[in-house]
Length: 187
Image (cartoon, rainbow, N blue to C red):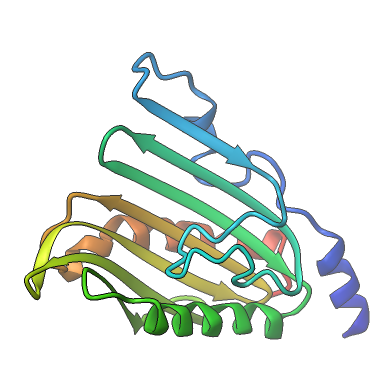
């Protein structure tokens, strides 16, 4: 067990491992479209209801983040984070769920629901509200833990009232990554 934890903590999320690496490396001629890439272990979660840089940082050993932005109102992201142990990754999921509950406001609300993916998962909805009703603007994310790995897929844009179909692409991406994450994670 100790040997497995040492091996898992020594592994990094390699370049070209994420699903959108090829797209992120391709130059888009439209100046309003861009990709940012990061291998910083300290990168903020791409789903971060309280906008706290310390959310889910404890126990990280490696991370890789890709964010696509199309001005003015669309973005998607992919983030894979490895933790020192499955317990540390599980705590990250729980802390994210707690942040979603505590950082909603009257004008922008977060909700979470469990999902049947990996070892544990949440679907996270961020939604603008106006006059107590869903307004245009929000984010949809699938956050999944498998072993000591955390997988995050998000889409933000001009969403209306939340619907299950809003998570179709993120769920598809999560399933594709779950099929290969055990190459680098302690599953």
